[in-house]
Image 1 (cartoon, rainbow, N blue to C red):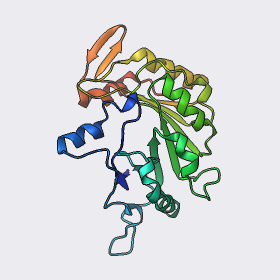
Image 2 (cartoon, one colour):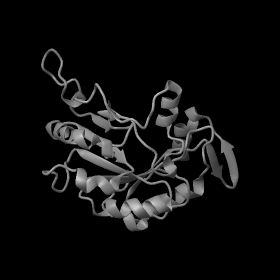
Image 3 (spheres, helix red, strand yellow):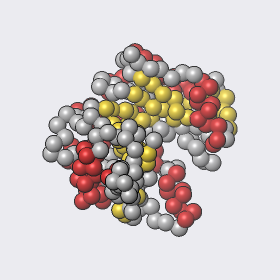
Length: 238
């Protein structure tokens, strides 16, 4: 697994951003998250060592822009080079998530076609409103590998009209002292929708404030992922 942050910085655009860990971390460091800057690792996928070999080893999954949004407007001038690097490194598999899917069609390269084989795009939604708005764009976007990310999941959501062509739906709660509740019933509802449509489902993490059977549990951050795994409700579509 690799991480690639060609730029950093972001801006809140919806309720899912309220307790964003990037903003919290930057505040502690005295950094203005709203300023989008190109990083020193911009060319990481094509950097080579002294032997002329790529530093990013072949076969890796590379997570892109997890401290920003790959489709953020401020990065329009840099994105074309990133697409080119993804195309060059066809031996890597790139994943990026976005809350700005409405910008997708205007941001893809001219040779995108039906999508690159080695790029997965995750559209993030947190409530029914953002699902209704963003997924209409996601539905028609030409992307070979699609995921829907419901994290943080803030309410019960109906995704059933938007699961065609989606490989996986990932669900999780907030990890924050002021985290909004994650109700297990909401998680199970999305799981059922996925099973009905033969789409893989992953319960990635519980929320700090986790509601199950009308009882609220206060969980430690270090236990959120392991508790989700203990639920044993992931579904792998054939």
